[in-house]
Image (tube, helix red, strand yellow):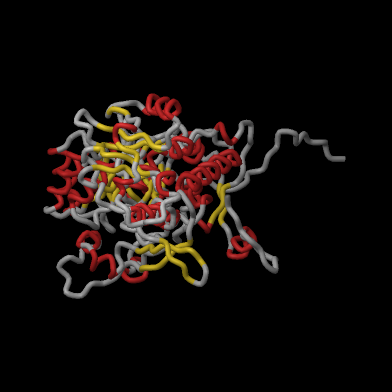
Length: 510
């Protein structure tokens, strides 16, 4: 009779390491593999998501909005920074416009409306009604010029016009005049302003300077909505962090100067193929002229590409080529790399030089974010996931009863026609025939970033909990040590992992 063996400590090898996962000759996307679960001994809320974006800058949330003209301007950048991430202002616009957008983010003060709707005494009640129809409120400041910066003359609210029958009346006949208004001086803190509003029982609090000129407004409604953002991305002066994209062309040196003057914290050199003499020269120029400015280079998908930019002096790398939902580079140019393999290969090389990697493209759900982070990315850039939020540029429209927003790749012919920056990104400025590397389409309304980002954050935290990683740094350590295990998926497995075998269903993610 065979001897009884003790198997109490025996655990068979299961799964493969990240190195083994990508060791084959084929490239992998995020859908081609899964991460095997680990051991849970902590709550998902205990998972720390802070992660570096460059050598010096760290975000509390590893999420970045893409520098695309249908994704990121000041509204998106402010929201992303408040939620602990970062917004990168696109450059398919005039340099002055881009610098102004950066300046809006840096000057943002939570709770203060720095660009309120303003009318003059010559406007009529009809104009106030139009404001309410467009913006959803009727509390409007009145100045002598009808613009911000003019001398404050009064305020008009719904209670002033609710029972007025003659909409042709001048505002001056119904407004609350200046001498009856409660105001606050410029420089008043948000908490002080809140106390003034509570004591006055007013709905709006105009902020004026020493010349009694309107410089801002505080709304009781906004204060009620506002909450603290303890994870907000801020610089040493407690201002929100913001990034901006530039090209590698000579003329963008002037754009860069304006961005630096506006207070930009980090610049992304925006190119579909970053391993070029043009980008290397621009990196060296920035290093000489603005030594304290953080530089993110890219895009790259191989270690060889990464080496060129790391040697030139970048502080971070943007990884991805042709994997975005609106990008057709891989089809048209026959060049690129599946995103899962690209992220791992570049991150595994760049970590030796302490250069963080940003996964850019191929993110269609929160699970893909977790996979990108598990392959070595420090942060991820999102385009389509954020394009249909309230904070993205553009207007909503309806098609077949569905609320949509326009979303386009910067390599589509439409974007190239609208701005030279798109042509520069794809090295086609001098081409007589433009070859599209992107498409233009639409995406379904996702609501506000202020509700969508918390869903993504919670999803990442739960993913890390299932893996057994209490932080993103621990997640990367587990991956490089081989403790984190992966498994490839067949097409049947991919089908099994999604919704199946139902007659119909409704999917609500949050």
